[in-house]
Length: 274
Image (cartoon, rainbow, N blue to C red; front, side):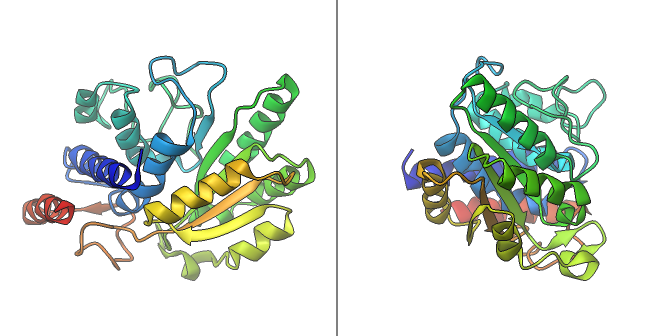
């Protein structure tokens, strides 16, 4: 897809997020809107997969480490054709194939269960080592939140990934600056991320996570690199992108909106498309 087509897809992904969150009139809305651009680039530019055969052996693996943000991934997967769009209207409900926290037993195309945060990168290391032993060219993509980087297993895994030169890992940090208890820097400041991952022998890039052009360039560079290093793309994203009244709200990690706000949300998103 070209840049304009990817921008259009990102709009559809954001619209899907609102469609799901509106069912309960609350949810992980702001960070999902902020993550829409790099998820769009992943599913419609970077990754190799067959949506109609989600267990295809040659597929690239995508791991959602912070499983509570599954709403954003479902929004992209629906556009990619992993399941019918009408499943979105069951998000988080009893017997839904789209539980609030992602689980492979329920949703085709989901690789790991996302419960406790901080376990995604360790799982990615194991998968990447296994793929290399099989002689597979498949890559392991992983999406982490900046808040979960305070978890110890992340750094043990980073040390392992660098030591074993797992160049088939392309990791993303959604550096949106918010988590459940407030601003990430006030809870546990994990910066400087570029320096830290570089010290663990990662090839590190830092980009505007809401710029389709920068994201495409970063992914292409990581995929074409000949360095025997795992790859980290730190994405500085704006929670609530597309909805002005959510931007800058440090309490928007999980937020409830009243009827007037929902009307404003749908109207703003539509106007932003024009």
